[in-house]
Image: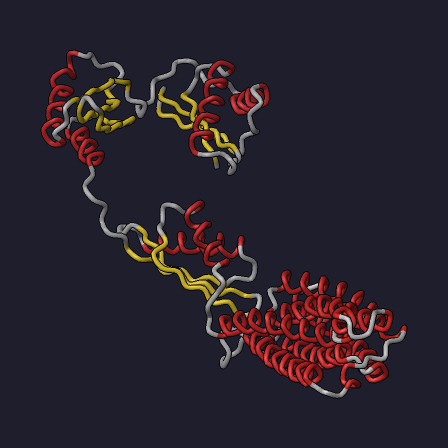
Length: 464
């Protein structure tokens, strides 16, 4: 069942129950003369009109977007919620005026309430209905992000407390005759019904404030920030390479329209930038159902010339790679440490001058107090293997993966050039792992495979 159907069914049931409760409360209120029950009857009558308006608003909001309404018709629900707020304000005003008139009247009959069993029955029935109806409307409103149903749910949640107040009021009126006349308790119990109606009015005013503020904010496109926070969190956690520069969210009913500007390297090809935008839109819309996302790519400023980039450029001028770079301002001075990648078959003496020149240049350019290097064989070089490749090489890889408890590979590709060979084994991605955890896992799998497979190629295990 889609969200529009759910909203229509919920709104329709609300109309029927409101009509039933309104008739019951008016009949019993007239029979007993209870201001509390009459105020509840008027409240229910307005709820019935509001529920009918909600039903119409839900049907209209389900209409698709058109040329005149490119964002759809969802705002009609906020209009309906605002109308319900105004109706509730009128209800509260009438109840307060009537209560003040009865409290200040010199006529003893103004405070008289004819209590009978039906007064208690109608309030108890109303409580049971309102508890169930408020829970149902709140659940559907949350599922469908419907302002109109949320307003209805708030109404019936308030009815629970107001009905409880009225029940307390008519109970007080029923036992007033049992107290000493002219005592403070007798005086209070005689006015319990009117005081309960005032409590109802105060509760209605509180609801009006919350509903009115939310409805106006929605009509003015001021979101509650939840969707915007979700988008910012998604970008920060799952797209950190492309900083979010600007975000605008417009919420219409249960649909969010998201416009965002992200920074990307200015050297990107237009096709690559388009693929990144598609990936971001797919990510956002996957986490925020019903959202429509538009991504604008903005060329990022050129990165500052950092010390790390300077060190890497110096290394390249001396014909070797560098990794494991550490730059630290320690108590012993500014220290630079780097792993230098040299040809594995080269002698240390052959590269001694180049290494010393690298250290001196880094020290002069960065004004470093200490430049420490560690020399390693260049892992980019593929060694030669003399052992022939077995015919069942892929089956051996699969068996070794199973024996080592690693995931089964999704692909095994062997690249050869004469006796230089390397094999790329691709395994399913494990998104829950951090970068450090995934690196350690791949390294561990690689080590196990090297001990169980014949030495015919260099192995590289990667995620999809």
